[in-house]
Image (tube, rainbow, N blue to C red; front, side):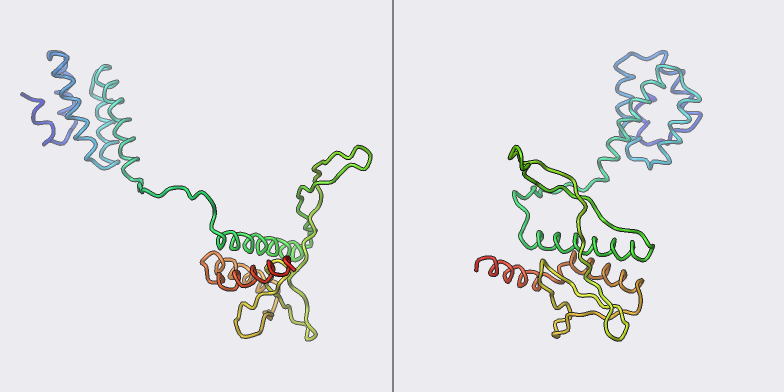
Length: 225
């Protein structure tokens, strides 16, 4: 029978014409069997080949064949898309590790410093908004209001006119160099932005984990006292 050879043949314009004429004389179960084979055939083709087959079917086939093929074409695209995904057994953690929290905290502060430096460079005032809780003096009711957040710059100009920056975790200056030289000297504002970006990437990569853990313990002990 014609349909048993479909898996081994490429669908051309002539075969599509033959499909249309043959489909008028076969039983329903034979047509269903054919489209099951067609689904297997299409799924093994590249996306470009699938689009080519789709176009030829639309040009040469009848309405019923086109509708059935469109249905198969959508299924094939769906399964092809799912096949490109990487499935793993990882589960969502119940809580974020403490070291990741420290990284996130420093990265957020570095991002604020980058925005502050960029704003000063462009002559723009940088004052991000945040919510804070205040108690109404008359009613005693606790309300949340939106106010401008004050960002303290980590950078300054030294005695020799150079731009300098110190990296802070909380109120503690951390020695990124590891050589008791916590201050980074820079030539200009562009270098300052690049340096902050570099330290941001290093933080995300875990290169400052030891310093962050030490700084976190120091701050914690300070609060205990």
